[in-house]
Figure 1 (cartoon, one colour):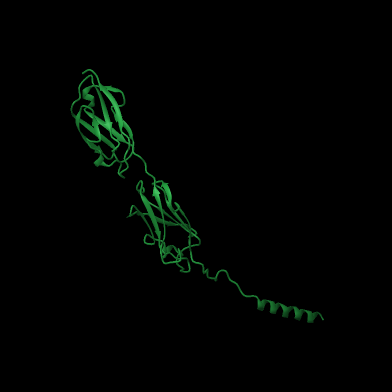
Figure 2 (cartoon, rainbow, N blue to C red):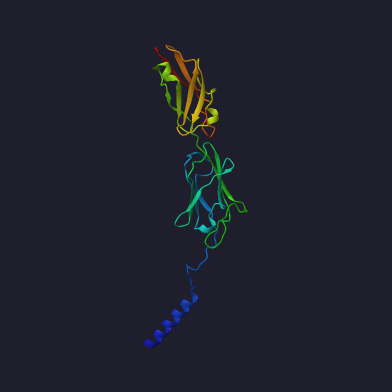
Length: 244
């Protein structure tokens, strides 16, 4: 009887095992195509800092061989902005970074092409068509300012000390905006030059400085940085000359 029971149990086990479908998660192919889960900045973001990195996150791991400068392209004001692409260790995201800052006030668009695939070769799924995935954002603008002048406000100097009047700015300026029209001294004539390394404009007096007299150094709001962002408001420094 015991022998018969053992035989029956073996038979039932055989039938149950035969009916169960074998499963191997290692060999199973994931048939869902990769999609873009999120981006930083998000589409439509404004005031993005000029030194921000761009992060693209996918719904699954992608083949990093397909992630390169031809499959992800950033353009700011319609000009290609070169960036380094660094995939994450799990291959589910990529970070775009650059050695140079993005242009202030620019509109940037990132294009992610469908040539990017998952580990099984399935291409990126976008909107159901063959179009690339695109998102855009705008870069913040920093208004330039005057950080220091010589002479300072209300300073009294001898005429010989004000032969060269200087204005230092907060950032690199557009040299074409640093002219005698935009940097001037009341009742004086002079030549204006600009040193990009020190961000300093110099008004070299040619005539008009006299003792015991009040003057105004005027930096107009038309002075602009390298991205064309103007100061917007005039800066006026009052100074005077003393006895010879």
